[in-house]
Image (cartoon, rainbow, N blue to C red; front, side):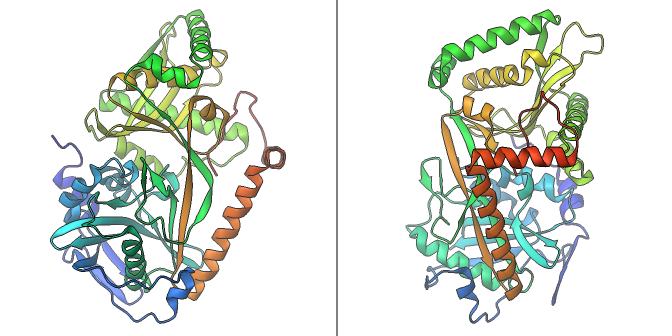
Length: 447
């Protein structure tokens, strides 16, 4: 049974009266569901640093849509593949679109009467530049787009070059640059269909632990003896506080209450570190509330909240929280927090991960993903590091400048992070410059 936004929610939140306006283009969503722009763009292909000269694949047509509802059936069919990221799933993107003002654009490619790819994008303006990017990209851990497993025998390089041409032709009048960030060139053992396009290595990788049906066998991949010892120590210390319960928020009221606790814990943590709170924005919080409001199923749930709650505490306080998403056999930890004023010596965050992974093994999850960003606790759990790349496609002269800036920033961050002594010095400087630091805090958001 499909569980997600109701038809009324989809129409009111995504479609009705949502005007899409750009230079030279005005589309009222209530009446028009798709459009195509075909313009001459001589010379622009050189700006993407590619010498590919593809012929159009037979029977493939590309259209640009501004309504998610027009694509829902095909979208849900494509997202069923294990190679498609949860961050490009219909329900995840719907939650983002209905809570943000960025203008959505959906590119659909059809081979005959069958949809073979969808690229869910949004238009944002950053200063001088108009950027087309994956929906919700700032808060995503891995982006793939949606591609059919069967491309009708079409070589991936030919498809990628064709999509490149279509992106230029369809979006050059509404965007200066396209940035498809945090994309693995290989995922779930298969090359990405766009892997042949020009890209730059992102400054961050993501980290995964393959799961086996047997939890003991899973732990054997990562020094089971040491992991169990840490677990027993945490358990004993939690018992000294009166014990704990591992809970997964069930009712909507409980989900909302635990999300509020997470936001408060995270705000305190960022303040202690002297760092900006990436969850402070009202639209980001609205998105999280929309995501937890969707029930989903055991195998497919946009966002569930796992927590450790003290038994003996009069207020039943929450000492650790993890926001977890599942799509098929892939589970992603989207975020986490702890109450650093209570039971911090019991390592409640580590204990919560232990419980989540133990449960996931028995529920058919085969890949647990700690998400993007290098942290010691991730490396202690994970056996797989997945490099990410950014595909950067300038569409205008202004876009070429934006592309150069993007590459410079990424290369600089990557160089700093690859040198541990320099990275440590930068962190110390930032913490000293921005204010306080909590000695109990050891990880920061990926940047």
